Length: 164
Image (cartoon, rainbow, N blue to C red; front, side):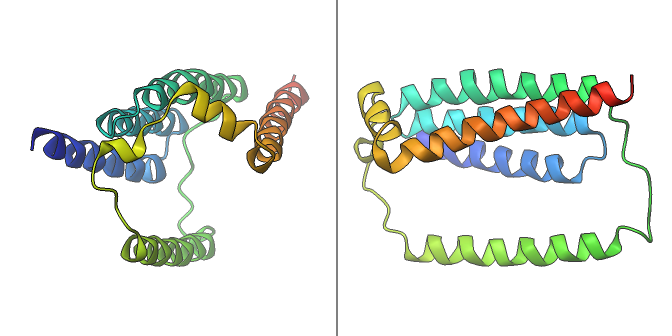
C-alpha cells in the first residue's frame, strides 16, 4: 500500500516537473526541473524492483547528461526567452496540436496495455541490460544516439566559438 502511494506521488511529481520544464522561460530552471523529472523516474524504477535501472537513471541522465546540458547552456550564455506575443503564436498552436496527438497516443497505449501483476515482471540486471543494449536489435540505436550527442556537443562548441 505504501509503495502504491509513493508510486503515485513520484508520478505526480514527475508530471508537474515536466510541465515546469516546458512552461519555464529560463533554460537553466528548465534544466533543473528536468533533473527533478529524472530523479522521480529513478524512484519509480526503484519501486518497480529495478535498482540497477534506478541508479543508472541518476548517474547517467540526472548526473552526466544534465551536467552536459547545463555546461552548454552556460557556455552559450542563453538568456531568458523574450516576450514575443505575436511572432510565436503559430509555433504555440502547432505545439499544442502535437501535444494533443501525443496525449491521444499515450491514452491509446495505456488502454491497450497489459500490466504485470508484480515487481518481479520488471526485474532488470546488469547482464540483461547489457545483452539487450548490445544485441543487434538495439546496438545501432545505441550508436546512433552516441553520434547524435557528439554532434550536438560539436554544434554547441561551434556556436559558442562563433561569437568569440
